[in-house]
Image 1 (spheres, rainbow, N blue to C red):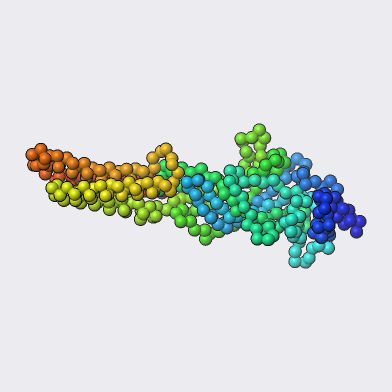
Image 2 (cartoon, rainbow, N blue to C red; image 1 turned 135 degrees about the vertical axis):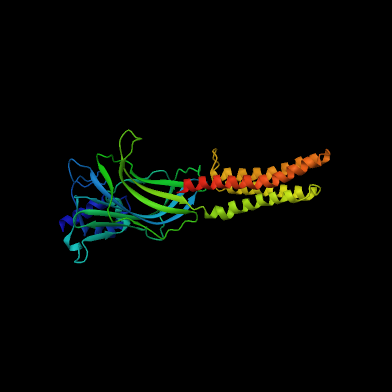
Length: 366
């Protein structure tokens, strides 16, 4: 009874003035279930072994990938993160346990009175807790002094992307969980074996996804080394969308431009109309495709394709200009030769370009 009273008095003395009466119920319940040692402090990590850092085990439940923003190079995840560590300064009272459970669970509001690893997500832009009324988190203390803290988190994190091979590109997003203030001499991180779960039903519009959990690493960009863990998300783009939306339409426009070569050179409105329509449509399509990716300074595979298609269409317009000028200058026979040769050369050149291009795409997509 005296010990319980001491714990209750210890906690209420840490509360802001005016809050003691309001939180006396939860704190009293907390003191009735667990016992803190006299040297307990939320500012100091527990020391299980004098010569070893404290082991903090992680497990993650990747529930969903909410979005992949390629223009902003940000990936949005829905996760549940659990942390496990041993704190010998905390003991569970036997009266608080039952035959079916060897732990006690507390409301997340009392977590501020426990020492909890100071984890942050590196390169995160925003972290959201999907709260309805009570924060979706729990604090659990086991009878062997193991503490588990679990929380649902949705967050946006930066993902450096390379679009040289777009639209058969592969992106690797590294989500790093690091300690902000405790060094590798104080804490050691590790993934808890068999406890993490990746939702296999995650479906992304344009990507196949593979997730890999990598064990502890040490930061090398600070004066001191801090522990961390990495979750790697490998995204491999499916080309089907671009085949239907970009490649097939652009092939058809090149074919239409080639068909214009069979219209009589005297039919100037028909030849010019077909050539300019296909050229302008391809240019607009090219601009629309580029709007879906960042404005990078290098050339991607899709850029090569679109520029080549524009070149073939432009060559058909250029051929009409040469033929018309030849007829106007009284060299109709020369114009007819150019017309016949271009009708053969354009499809052959386009077929050769397709063989080279799709071979290159296939090699880099396997």
